[in-house]
Length: 279
Image 1 (spheres, rainbow, N blue to C red):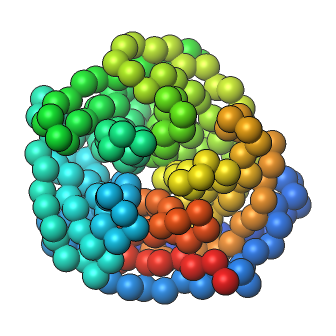
Image 2 (image 1 turned 90 degrees about the vertical axis):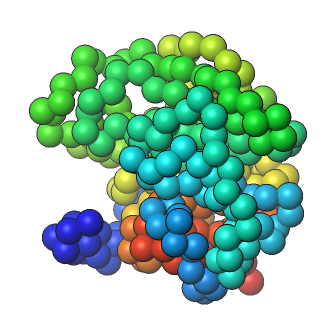
Image 3 (image 1 turned 120 degrees about the horizontal axis):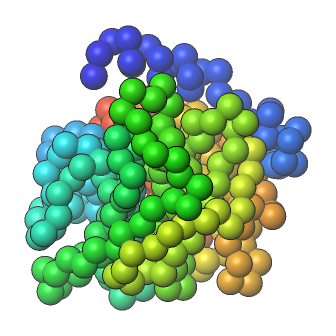
């Protein structure tokens, strides 16, 4: 990545604050409740980590690389040691942007990025590691216009994905002038779906990853420069209960997952691993 792009991310994260979110959506100030610590370095093979999911417990994790990387998942521990590499059969890494995992240990790999506005349809790979079997979930956006390669801003782009009670939830990256992040829902099973936004919220940042806590009571959105938290009422996933926002200025942060119901793990594309501890 060029020095100019690194500089762009540095400026973007420095000036990214929670103040607009406090004013617009009544997010609570929770910075003092969280401690952010660099705890390790990702293995070299995962040099552009863009998604995270827990392993069998809270000591191992899985990640994948961004667009153009191999169709592989990498398991590592909190020190950053590489534990395993799993090839994903019948899959291609066009623009892998986030990773989720369900209660049965099935992975959902989001080939959902669209920075160049070159895609009209998107895929999520449903990957069963034990069976080494991959199924495809295809989708497009109902409100999507015809993609144009020369468009200055992506028409439809997402980098955020999580699984909850048999459904997959995606969030738009937020390129638009109105700063509106849209929430989409689809079944977590093979098929082809037309997605209509089920909710939206104004956020003054681009969303790069999302995760839900193991107990399903809160979810987090990661952006370039901050983390936004929402409470979940019953089984409904929406933006109705924003609960907190805190700054996390750690360069190009692209992946987040929960360690437990409060603490989180974050990685950036510079290969660093951060623990976010609730105190």
